[in-house]
Length: 326
Image (cartoon, rainbow, N blue to C red; front, side, top):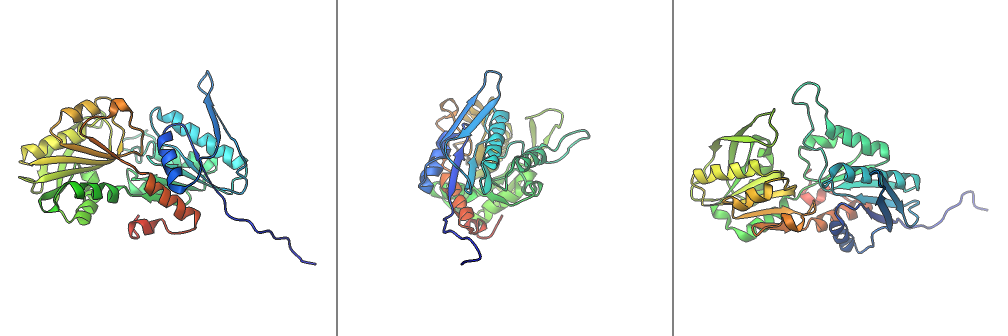
């Protein structure tokens, strides 16, 4: 008689999605060749959220995809509830996928009596039951340290850079950082495309949100096609002012490349009316029809997310997708 009990069982993956960005969830599921986990989700009259999964997740490797899109607090809360439901349903491992990390810009204190909301976000998901976090182009890399567990920091830069390379000859290209905070990102673009780097120095009034003043340009842009790179476009003020500074310094053309298209408030009108020839973003956030315009190009992030999910599920290496970089 055997001294133990054993059974042959295969690992099981489930992909659950919130309601914020169903098109992205469908695209990721298609890339993986699976169906989304059947889910019932609705909002009560008083604004409370309800989620229930339609089949067993016991022992499953669960991935919970939710874009933190407007209304952002509702999207975050729905994802937290989904994680809690999976934990209570005995999922073996829960990976939270937030293509755009909500509250990422609040990653440090600028003045006294301010919160560090990006850290609070990590604590909330850890408490809810998340074992792992996956996100694309965090506002700052140190956010990885806020979560007490593995964090898969994915890069959209190779996807965006490949598109730019297909559109512009690299011998007349300059990569431009719109501020000092994005210099490292711009430097990676510069290395990837073999193009020189320029930096725009700006000063932001901390008491007035979403307003900047461009000061000076460091680097050679005259007669060149400039690619302004950033992690997100919110109201578009920084990008449009940076583009204006480039044209004032003799730039021949300006292309904007950014991962997250928040496109809040006046952003669409500002970008449409600017001298920028093209705005290239990914679909980490849903882009509604009223936010689309002729200059806008939206690239799919679904293949990258699917590859990362597959690596995590197979106990492979996510950093191998980016040549060992994080």
